[in-house]
Figure (cartoon, rainbow, N blue to C red):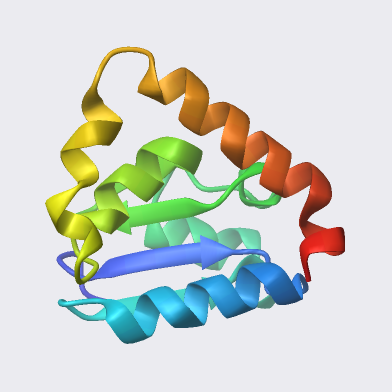
Length: 117
């Protein structure tokens, strides 16, 4: 895995998450590698980024870009700069109070993802 490549680590056992990750990969302008954390050991996670653990990956998605880790909503903001069409509207996610709204939306999706599948 290249340090400059964008990597999305997600819950591969969730069909909603898998559909979303595959859709993002297809619309990505630059290469996007998607990996289920279920296929990785702690050592492999540490090789990707020293801050990654299975517990962190269980809690929320992780975006690794240029060697940096971006969890949850902050990862989504970074990732959307690379997605066709959405990249023109990502700046909205940097406005005041949007991080709180974004974290709530991701919490809601995490809580109800099985019903959304």
